[in-house]
Image 1 (cartoon, rainbow, N blue to C red):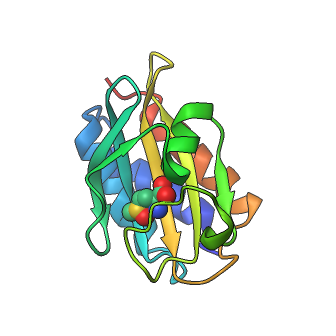
Image 2 (cartoon, rainbow, N blue to C red; image 1 turned 60 degrees about the vertical axis):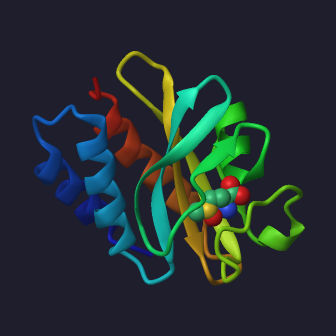
Length: 151
Ligand code: SME
């Protein structure tokens, strides 16, 4: 488990006064990715059209470029606005395998200052059962603080 208070403080210090979404996404992806060895792919998909996600800043191996809301764990988070923890991707219908090594995922909706969905934050692990509700809660708080001021 990362030291979430320290991670939140680092993101806060690095992004203070910044409201550019790409700059914020790049910084969060980097800081979160390096905070825990369970995180093998860490990044954002952005809402670019109704019901369509496109790759944003990330860390790790290459990610699929386009994901419709109707597909995958990312699509489910975007469609429902609810955090998704998938303990075993093989048991998730419609999972999109960008990397064959991925075993579990956590995907959180990202909301901007206006309250609109601007994307999802996706963390993939090569370990099964990598993510806990505490990870979801702590990371959601970091996203709310960071993107709650995004223009
Ligand atoms: N596995 C995700 C797709 C994104 S990548 O793994 C980077 C999904 O099913 O939504």
